[in-house]
Figure 1 (cartoon, helix red, strand yellow):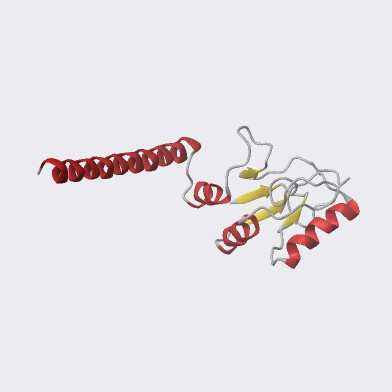
Figure 2 (figure 1 turned 90 degrees about the vertical axis):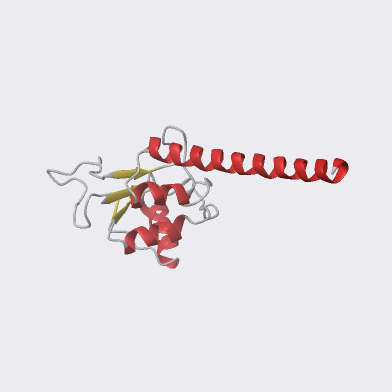
Length: 151
């Protein structure tokens, strides 16, 4: 799968033109996706030196991109068939509708090829299961207390 990844607000906190703090698990998750065979494209509004700084920031943390702001490494801006529109399967960006998911959810969506509805259903099932378990524990405590008082 080809995955386009934004930099500011997605890999690091927004501090443009400076580089913000790394968002927890962003680099590790992207490296794991790469290990699984996905091609990562850095897709950023940054240009020139600011873009070089972002690429170097990632490189220093062990993350190398397949391409940067292009569909493939050899693609050149200004070429007859060049298009700024990337042909990616997935875009990871803090400007998504609903904002940026946590990186664990992003990994699960891509790795297991989940739809957003699947992720929401899983989350609701987990929360419902937790609520039911909590209710059982509360009921057990209440019964235990009643047993001690009236038993």
